[in-house]
Image (cartoon, rainbow, N blue to C red):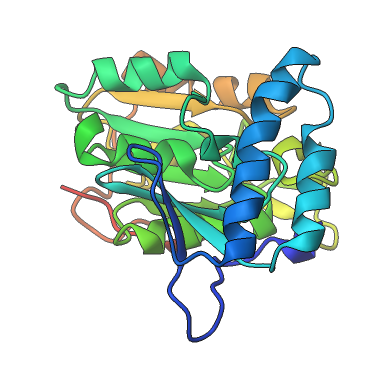
Length: 273
């Protein structure tokens, strides 16, 4: 599965496939693409009737018939989100009536007039980061953190697609800097993270929220909003952010290039000021 998740791709020599959630307009599509979109949209309401079962299977069937490419979903007039066409998880966004975790979106929208720093822990492809950093949500500064290297490549693509307006970090959020973790699972939306006692092949480095703030990657001079979805390391992540959440941690490197705790990597993006 990881090998299939990479930077957004389009068919060479053709306009990108783009879907606007506000208007329902589909651009750059072939007749087959349009048929696939209609099938995906029709499958979403049916899935709800049957307890949300079977939609992923339906997506795989449609994907076997459609050309492999990405679709760029316009979430609003300042947010673009690229996903694999017919993805079993994110294709729900192609139904305009669907609201992905509406309570979180409502919170971010309600705080749009305030200034805060958004930390997206377990960012997946960067959906929350691209929303929070968009104009309708207050153009907030954001740091997106993703442990899976395959998801992180997708995350980087999302940042690139939106002018690199938020920073991406390929690491696992845990209780301390300099540790190691392993990503497990076969589906990008259900990867888990397991802390390790020592380094092993294909592991990822760990950082703490306090360490990120001290390194200048989190701006603690403004209120900080943390979205925490790290599948197995939530308690450790909260323990590693006690100072940040209490307001007692500040960056000693503010105004200089941040130092990222090894072996983690900043992979794209710039922090707004």
